[in-house]
Amino acid sequence: MAKKITKAVIPAAGLGTRFLPATKAMPKEMLPVVDKPAIQYVVEEAVQAGLRDVLMITGRNKGALENHFDRVGELEATLEKKGDTERLEKVNHSTDLAEVHYVRQGDPLGLGHAVLRAHMHVGDEPFAVLLGDDIIDARDVLLSRMIEEQGKRNASIVALLEVDPAVAHLYGVATVEPTEDEDVVRITGLVEKPSPGTAPSNLAIIGRYVLRPEVFGILEHTAPGKGNEIQLTDALMTMAENPDETGGVYGVVFRGRRYDTGDRADYIRAIVQLAVDREDLGPELRPWLKDFVATLD
Ligand code: G1P
Image (cartoon, rainbow, N blue to C red; front, side):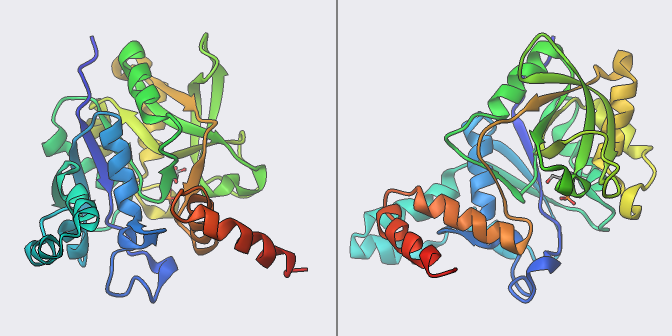
């Protein structure tokens, strides 16, 4: 029987060079998406799926991250004195959201290496990995569906999204076989960031994984791959090739709303898409946006 999943691992050690100079003194995970730091959406998603034990893999200059999920006495006292309960609630929400732990990655040797740093904390249990660059719309279900499949199949599960073949080279790409479940496929092959035009399919891994702990032992022996980094995708390929020892790898095909905050244009798109849907901002922004778009031609 598969063990119950309680832990989420969030790699957050990247340097955020694509957003310089904004990320010169601030972690990229703290960039606001509308009015919340990107990382808070990801922690909220983990909590919504029942995972309140969160481990962040961080690095240097990530102090702001830790502060965001901690108390901030002075600010709380000021808001309390003013009777501004609405803002006080917003401040307390991120403090109380989850039990957040931190470990540093040390050397930046790749996503696989970052996940391996979680071994001590996670131990011998299946766990989730959520990458901060991908935001999944809170109105759509993904992680709990993946957790459900992990329990049912006792395998490792990745989230897949059908992407435009022109951008497949930016992702880990899967070769798959259908299963009896319409939204679940069995992974037969994985390749990390294939050269443009060579992707074996248009099914890309988006940054959500529910993994069996065997991944740690495999990561320890995974040689550097693409970009000379230890790739999680390569370790998953080894698991897919050895289903007897590892349970194999399956993909849940996601058809909901996903926002990419990893590069500048996508980040701006994410903010616009999320803001127009908000009750407090949408009514003001929609008509303006329509007028603005009309001026573009
Ligand atoms: C990572 C993974 C890649 C995956 C992507 C999803 O790449 O290595 O397999 O498709 O996340 O966002 P990164 O975008 O961090 O380079």
